[in-house]
Image 1 (cartoon, rainbow, N blue to C red):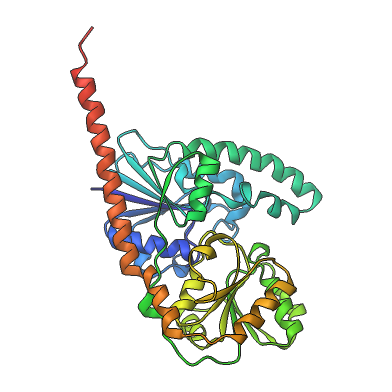
Image 2 (image 1 turned 90 degrees about the horizontal axis):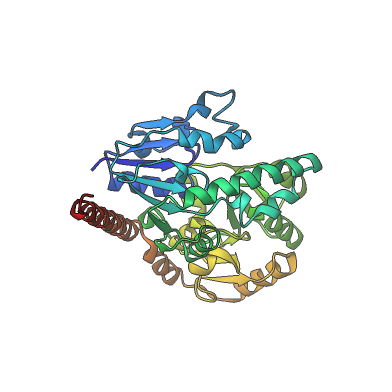
Length: 377
C-alpha cells in the first residue's frame, strides 16, 4: 500500500506534528506533502521521510512568512499530484484536505480543527485587525469558506481529535467523524516535588489568553513561568513585572523539567483539544483550565484540576485559590493521563485507519461489480 501524508505546514513541533510522528510510525514508507518545510524545526522521525513542499517554499520569505500567502494556500495544495497513492491521510487544521484525488484513492482526514480563522474564531481574529485589513479579510475569508466546504465533501472519512472538533466537523462540513485523541508520550514525563511557580506553555497569540494569566499572576504577586513565543511576547513582557519569567521557545527536555517542577499548569484559552494539560498531568501536576473546548475531555474537575468559567482575572483568581486549598495526589493525576498514552492512541489510530481503508475498498469493489453486471444496451 502506497501512502501519502499531507500536513498543512512543517515549521515547528506542536500537537499536529506529534500526530504526524505517529502516522510516520504507522506508515514508515509514507511520503509527506506540505505547504512549507523547515528541516531544522522538525523532528528526525519526520525528516527521515521524503518531504515535498509546495511552490510557496520558493517564494520570498515563503517558509517564515507563509501565512502572508494565505490566498495562495488553496492553489498550492491542489498542485500536488497524489493519483499514484492508494491511501492519503491529511493532517488538517488548515488546508491539507484540499488535495484533489481520483475516486479510487482513499482519503482519510485526521482533523485537528476546521480552519479556526474562517469558522469558529472568525470574529475573534477579525476584531484584532485594522479597518482596511478587516475589509480585505471579509472578502478573503468568504472565498476560503466556500473553498473549504467544497473540498471537505471530497474526504471519504473523518477522524476528529476530540468531541469538540467532532461537533465542528458536523456543523461546518456536515460530515460525521470518529474521535481519536492525539497521543501523549507518557513515559517521557516524570513526577518531582513541586516548587513555588505556576507554568504556562503555548504560543503567545491572542486566543491562547496568555495575557489573562500574566495579568492575574502579576496582580496576585505569584510566580508564573511562560514558555513559548509569538506576536504578544513583547507586549506581555512590558506588563509582566518581576513575578513573570518569559523563557521563549524551549526544547523538549526543558519542557519536561518545568512540567515536573511546577506547582500547577495554567490553561486559560479555549483549545480544540490541548496536549499541554495532558503533559502536565503526566507529570503529576494539576491543571487550572478554562471550562470550554478540549479541556472538558481531559481535565476532571476536583480530581486532576480546577475549571474556571469566565476568562476574567476574578474567575481565574478564584480557581487558583481553590487549587491551593486542596491536597493533590500526583500519582492519581498521572494515572489519569495514562489513558491518553502514545501506545494506546497509536493502536486506536491504526485500527481506525485500516478499518476505514478496508471499508472504502469494499464499497469500491461493490460499485465495480455492479458496473460489470449491468447489461449492455
